[in-house]
Length: 247
Image 1 (cartoon, rainbow, N blue to C red):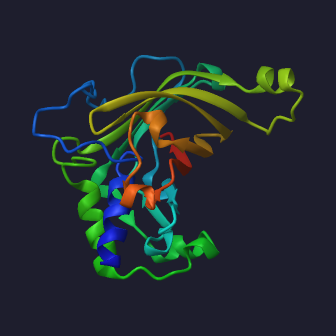
Image 2: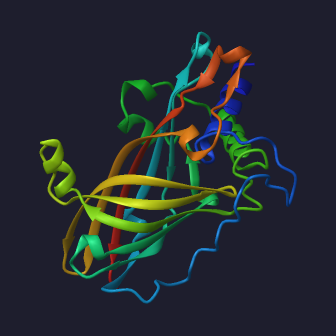
């Protein structure tokens, strides 16, 4: 029983940060059709860079909640199959990017990743539970990976954080900026503002994101059973380490 609850809870959370209602093939009420990811960067200012999957990673930390939280686990999900492009001319505010995450690239509770994240993730998750969670996550009620084999993130605009930091009287991290992005997950499209840091060297860009996102902000509903006694938190911790290179 415990394994089933753990797998269901994680699976329903992970694909797009929450669990949309079960969908019938070809029927996505209220959703907007996601655009297909482009094969190359559009005609924009700056040099073209490609995402270096060998040195890039998306990491999601998800947490249990509720009076029956002991029946669940905290989980680490990674995706190292990132694809996409960046246009960059030396001015962060003039940059543009598109990122594609194949759903086939998700890995549930990688042991090394769990160790890296510390005590909250020290419990060993067995292979059956990991496999069951992944099946639920990619299934038609969640990511619907057969119909939507990728998650996409596209920049709308990018601004440096200098003005915002000065207005707030706060210190600004070197290379700090924020991007307004469109995120497409399982037929749902949402707009988010994502703070990030970036540094550049000849032929190479390195960007990092570390933020908390509410599932409901994406229009999705966190998984909950037993009248909320076992649930996943609305907040999802997102870490993105992204390297882009010129060929």
